[in-house]
Image 1 (tube, rainbow, N blue to C red):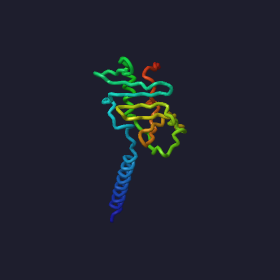
Image 2 (cartoon, rainbow, N blue to C red):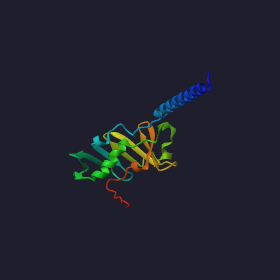
Image 3 (cartoon, helix red, strand yellow):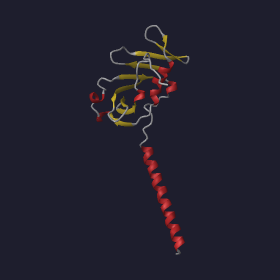
Image 4 (tube, rainbow, N blue to C red):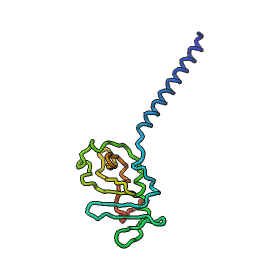
Length: 163
């Protein structure tokens, strides 16, 4: 076998080996995909209940494209704030773990810092993680870590934008 032919065969095998390794890595990465916090489409959320410590539960309903507070006399709510709460349904999960891996009191889930119910799906929010600006969220029998921006606050809370 000529030297040039041998070098081409070695190069071909090296390229094939790299393709196999790349395919294997893609398969591993796909298996680790965490996905969204819930399977609910945020645009389809029509009922929100928010419970914060020391305050009664706040109930909201979407009617004709606008959010209304339904506790007592119905009143229009801040559509942008309620849409932010609905967007929590699709929050990107950084990692999932079984609830049994944690002591609920140590991560702020006994009692939760906030409870958000989106069309019947309950999300319980705990403390900030020590690893960064992330919060623990209990969803059924699993605990998720989600970016802190998804932590519920009262829709009546005013925020200031920096320009």
